[in-house]
Length: 99
Image (tube, rainbow, N blue to C red; front, top):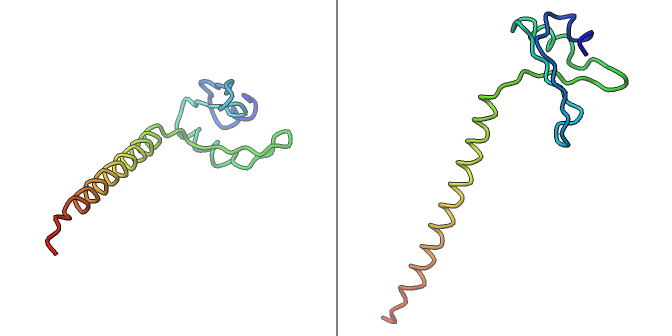
């Protein structure tokens, strides 16, 4: 891996996914962001041993925003359910027989 990724700049670290949900992935950390950009530009779609590389930037802020957005959606759905339940209770409780 150092041979492949090292062609685009000084590699600080390579971490291989060793857990069930990260198997088959690797995190490559470059010393310089411009080297990382060069690797992304040149290695995405590169064939290694019959497998094509998918090279992306790691963006923890974007992942956190997505998780926050999903949490907010769940909270909104829960509030909608609560409001619908209150509306149903109010509509069902107004039958005072004034007809």
